[in-house]
Image (cartoon, rainbow, N blue to C red; front, side, top):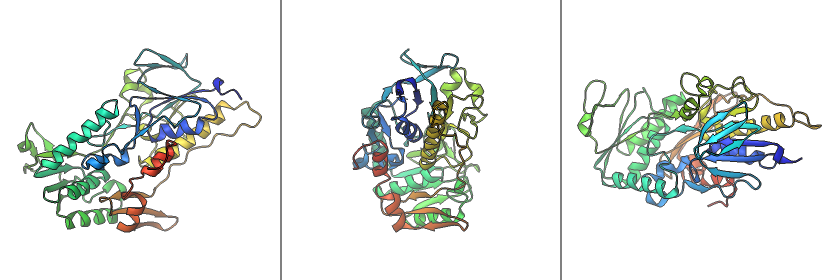
Length: 371
């Protein structure tokens, strides 16, 4: 069939958006819109922020992703649903038959792509590396996966520095609901002289290290501070575009069980941007991207002789989840059907994620040769 009659516009070139675009490339005329000139493999960003040999590892060109579609370097600023048009910051308009919202979440430094170009983002990583290499003491606020991983990476490259991790929860990695995983992380960090403070809420009252205090007023001295306390869905642009009614109070896009925006048959939302209740991980994003692609094909080919039927998306209660402690260590939470979970240690986690930080799989996703 003529794919030019099936126009799919995907807003956001992260894991979910790329997965949708790739799976629909042979079926529809796909346009992927992103504000970065390359795909940002965020999984490698924390190591890149402290290790100069990894500076450019997170940047993977979009050039091989689509054989038939195209990638547009721009930002969406408006959606005209009656006309089925996306308005770009440049003023250009993109017509669609199906629109996919995949604009992801806004991460705190250093796990962020700063600017638009590789040069700008690499400069930001170099700045973080410079600060980390010279600081005598570093404070990381937030003991989730990013905080734990960053603390381990800092200890690896700065064995002489004082590294402190402060977490508001009663155990590390508390959002995973696995105390065993949290204990494994704390044991590794403390064995490598990282100071871990639990049930500790850090706030900043002004400039300089003297402004850092916990909830009891105890000061925390640090030359460099990294905040790893969570993410925010990247949906402000939707609110500014007059689509605030699509959002829940937390700023996530409200979707039905087919990943369609509530009340819309032709607009889908996938990945970190939606309100599906499951862990916001890259495997989750790609699972949602694949499910949305199936339902988009069913919607666009609903009058075809061999059209497929849409399928509800079923969130995974738990996914395999690895936290690297540098290249050669880490812990992995592994669901076992009907038997709860198991925790894998350093050797298995190093093979699964820590050494490569999933770079081979990211290159596969972008149709690039493995590096």
